Length: 112
Image (cartoon, rainbow, N blue to C red; front, side, top):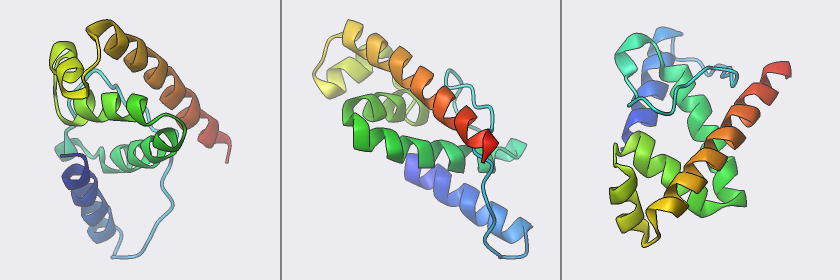
């Protein structure tokens, strides 16, 4: 689901900007508690999130998977715990830490 949404966002932005590559603003404010919607011009935000998730996966793959399953997959805490074979408490801990890391990462790129 993540790849589909990000691919669609990249295509949409490419077509909107005449097909030329553009710099993505990583300071986009994404609410990770909402399911992504492309129809509201949020493509750049999803691309920024995808880039940040790639960086998080290099540091902590499980936290990146928790974000991916919950945000892009729409899974509940319990469903995510079952999919990753961890406790719901671990999912919540990873969810909170990953959200904080992503918020910091996306905000840090604002100064670039």
